Image 1: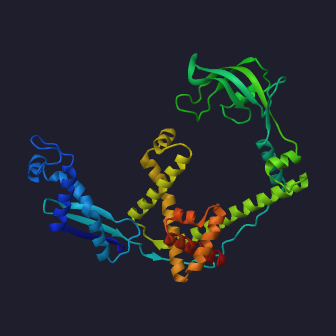
Image 2: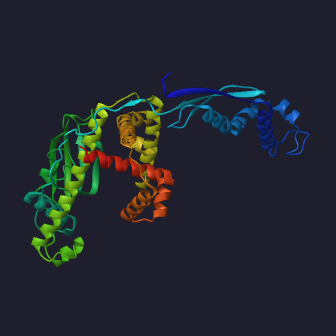
Image 3: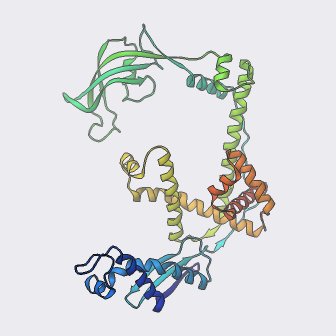
Amino acid sequence: MAKNVEKITIKIEGNEWQSALDKIFKKKQKDLEIDGFRKGCVPKDVYLKKVGIESLYYDAIDVVCNNAYQKALSSSKIKPIIEPLIDVTTVDQDSVTFEITIIGKPEITLGDYKNLKIKKEEAKVDKKEIDDEIEHLRNEFAEIKVKEDGVVENGDTAVIDFKGFVDGQELDGGNGENYPLEIGSNTFIPGFESAIVGMKVNETKSLDLKFPDNYTKDLAGKKVKFDVTLKEIKTRILPEIDDDFFADLGYDKVTNEIELRQEVESILLDRKKQDIEDKYIESILSKIADNMKVEINEEIIHDEIHRMMNQFEEQLKMQGLNLEQYYQFTKMTNEDLHKSMEPEAIKRIKYRFLLEEVADKENIEVTEEEAQKDAEEMAKNYGITKEELLKAFGSEEVLKYDAKMRKTLEFLKNNN
């Protein structure tokens, strides 16, 4: 057994166990109906003869479980870092025995964590990046208009009816009506969109194409014919770079194109600086983790994955989805998702352990004043009150721990 694991056996018996059994019987008695007795008035001996005392065990275990858990914690020499595992080994009318597994932090040996000579990139923005971003912004605010005359051009949206045929048979799922296809989006198979370019409204065209070799197994490499009718052409009218455009962007202090370019450059530079900072932090932590020696228990990994799964499920809810729908869309199973999260879970655990170890070695602490000031700044950045921030974190201790970890991270950044 690993040094950070302790198994403790706790036996609940005598009055405590009998009291739990009686409590559950009285709860069940209220709704119990047996011939010859009024509802709620069935004697215990009659109940036991009719149903059996075993029917009380499951709920009675819940009653005494917390007490067993607390007894195990008080007698353990290990401080748990995840919820202890509780197994019922024996149960009868006289007693119940729990085996409680307590898992603490594993032994950690830090390697080098200072003066690692990790280089930090310099943030630069070139002319092309500014041009591309301005073009991107213009496209975001482009006006969509119906093209009354002319033909489909790259960048237009062609509204089409289409039917696909393979081996003379209509292709299942290969048809649509009034389908808006943006030319250049590469939504359809190669050759489809380029064949639409040049078509006029109400024109019908047959396209003889071929599915890519890496397409779905039943269609890969097969010839396909599409009958396409162009119903409408929509084109994007990009806005002029003027006061109206600046107002749409929310750039109140921008009055001309030169100032727009300066504003865009500043935004891109800030974005790059943050990306570089994130990459720098990741490089530091990754290097320290590589230098560190630690054996992480499977139970600790599973606990972290469970936390990540809960976070992922909350993210799905914000998108109007649930896990079952996600599994249907992705063809994944719960086991697949669990396994895919394992590398990230291990990385998170290692980073947490190394930050805690560095904090201990360097005697990094957070005063109450620092914690309060940090909380106020965080709340301001998130646009919420300090009370709302505290509620999100769960407790002041968690908030203080988070501040300590960020202070430790600053120490590592300043010493590498």
